[in-house]
Image 1: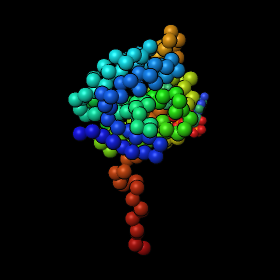
Image 2 (image 1 turned 45 degrees about the horizontal axis):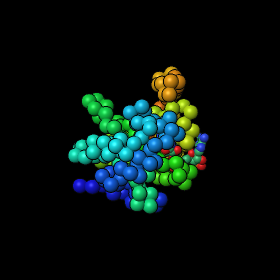
Image 3 (image 1 turned 135 degrees about the vertical axis):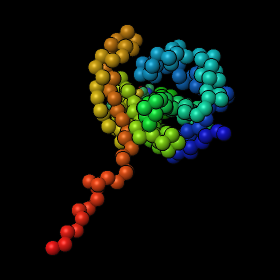
Length: 189
Ligand SMILES: CC(C)(COP(=O)(O)OP(=O)(O)OC[C@H]1O[C@@H](n2cnc3c(N)ncnc32)[C@H](O)[C@@H]1OP(=O)(O)O)[C@@H](O)C(=O)NCCC(=O)NCCS
């Protein structure tokens, strides 16, 4: 079953085989690659895009989606579910094609994907690990209620440079009522 989340400025939807050309065109950008894991290829070819889309086919649950702008796949947003005792957590990631930067599209997509991940997988925590130099990504996270928890010093290497990562998390509050939440019992005099 394909997913579609229509939003004000974009649509989050399942990837389609026909997305390969647009995705390769937009993903082949060093400014994008510089802010993602090395598993994201550079240069990024149409064959890379085809392999990526094919790898998602039949993968259940579906956790990686296209960000479509004006009907065209112009980015990606997805999450990795953690396992075992961390099965209430997921790491979220995203990128958007450069021509569409600065319009609030990633902010909108991240917010919708965070809600979708939490609701679909009963999560209590969604987190992201932008490189410390990635101001725009930190801003997108903060605008969606993610809170800076830690600076993971010298935890990654990108393009030959050791860098810090910033750990941001969106926490689903514990709604269970505890004794401390209850009003004090009335005492009779
Ligand atoms: C990060 C990214 C997804 C942002 O997409 P976007 O659609 O332009 O983001 P938005 O328009 O929703 O918001 C960007 C915010 O960053 C702010 N910003 C821009 N440059 C900035 C900078 N150098 N430092 C801090 N904030 C900055 C913008 O002003 C805006 O905030 P505002 O609404 O308060 O003004 C996009 O730049 C991208 O794909 N980058 C490469 C991949 C990447 O970094 N992915 C995330 C990996 S953790």
